[in-house]
Amino acid sequence: MRSFLDAKAMAKALKQQLSDLDLPITHSQALELVAKQFALDSWNVLAARIAQDVDAKTVGFTQTAPVFRSFDALKAKEFYLGFLGFKLDWEHRFGDNFPLYMQVSRAGLVLHLSEHHGDASPGATAFVSMRGVDDYQRELASKDYQFMKPSVQALDWGKEMMVTDPFSNRIRFCELSDD
Image 1 (tube, rainbow, N blue to C red):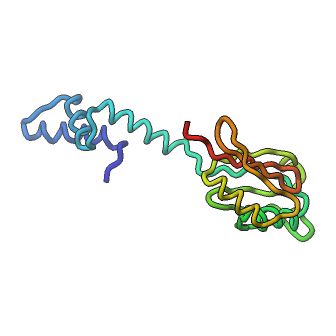
Image 2: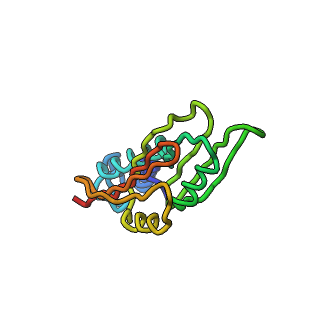
Image 3: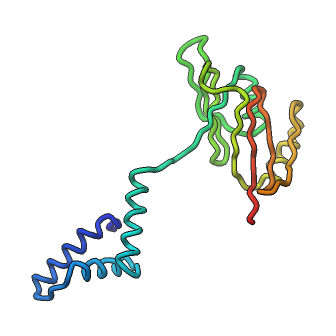
C-alpha cells in the first residue's frame, strides 16, 4: 500500500494519465482525487496526515529507561527482581572487578541500574504512569518484604504508590484519574 508521502507523486501521475486520455484536470483537482483515494475528505486533511507521517519518520522515541545508581548488585537484584517482580534482561561488566550495569523490566517499564561512578546520582525519582496500582500494591504486600511496606495514596491527579530502593532511588507508580 502506498504511504501518504506518495500522494503528490500520485496526483502528478494521475493528472498526466488523464491528460493523455484527453481528460485534462488541474493539479488541485488531482490532489483532491488522491485524497479521496485515501478515503479522506480533502487534500488539506491528507496534507495534515502527510505532515504527521513525515514527523513520525524523522523524530520518534521508542523507549525511556531511567538510570538509577546502585552500589550493590545483590541488593539491587533482591529489590528489583525479588520484591518488585522485574526480570533481568541483561547485565554488563567491562571485566572482572568492574562495576555492573544491568537492565530490568516489567510490563513495558524498563530501568537501567548502574554501579558506575558518575552514571547517575543516588536519590533520583522516576514517575511511572501505570494501570492496576492497587493490584500491584497487593502483590508487593503479599511478599512481606522486610524493608518496605508501600501503600497507595489518593492524590488530586490519581492514585500513587511510592517505593524506595536500597540506594535511595524512588519510583512513584501512579494510576492517573480519568478526570
